[in-house]
Image (cartoon, rainbow, N blue to C red; front, side):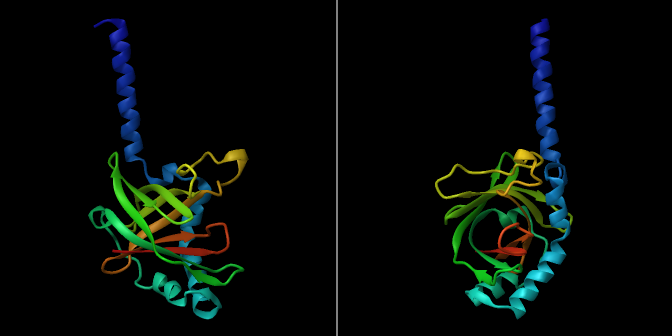
Length: 202
């Protein structure tokens, strides 16, 4: 084998090793320390948000807010996740009243052997990969974008200008919430609220 051919084979082998390592990486390996800490405090955010929704003022769509928080959290498989979903968001906790929003279109698909989540319409879009979590659910490491912008993906450990997190980054736990239902829980999303829930329904 020539030196040039051997070098090409070596580079190709290293590339395969890199892809294998990325495929096997856990969400903690890819998330910023700030986002790892946010998800570790999910119980705290959930308790504060649910207390605000039960006892505080709800600005809009009380039914959507309460429905988003119902059903508990349960393990979910990739087969149960893949496909199209109706999705809506509720926000609670913080200085503003709790609020519920209308239904949009979301999808979970497979991209290169990984589960990929997208909120496909509305003013705010969301896209990111899903990684197994010890609870039996999945961690979303995603990025928010605005309608008309290119899709943003999670910045991980590289937020700009030395900030602890990019404002576009999103970290959430995805779990089953009953028959034909799932939810994404966003602890301390950084704007407007302490606890956001995206309810998913078939």
